[in-house]
Image (tube, rainbow, N blue to C red):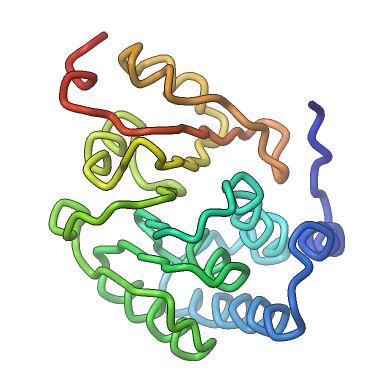
Length: 218
């Protein structure tokens, strides 16, 4: 199926409206988050400055598209290496479900907590620590945007997965290459979706749990 690319800020906002029908409060929260992100970017490098003019396409809609690949479960969503809150905070604005943002860098965690408090996102928790130290919890969704190479990402996070877990992993232009380097048992978990924000970028969508036996198979 051909995916219509989002190429303008107005187009990104229109797609979000059509796909998720945000309430006036949610629109206010999205706008407030976008503004806070731009201001904080002067203090710490959260996003590339060159992407600010296309913030809604490159970051807000790019994050929101993962929600359109969700199964509409209300279980825990774990976002790895949340950084600027992309995609985690965008998802948390559009969906009232438990959200765990995992981020090891102090300043980024302070920003995530500030935004969550400012926007009243009480369903958001921030784990300020390396993923290896985060207490194991069963996740309905595991997402990661520029967190780690695919094999390392899966190895570190598989303990959060169950047989019904969905993995939503934007992998840019290297998605297929990274997937091809995985053991066959891991490859079979995933299929590839086209990104709505970049014709050359793709999202790896996985289903299920990787067990100890699978880790050793190639």
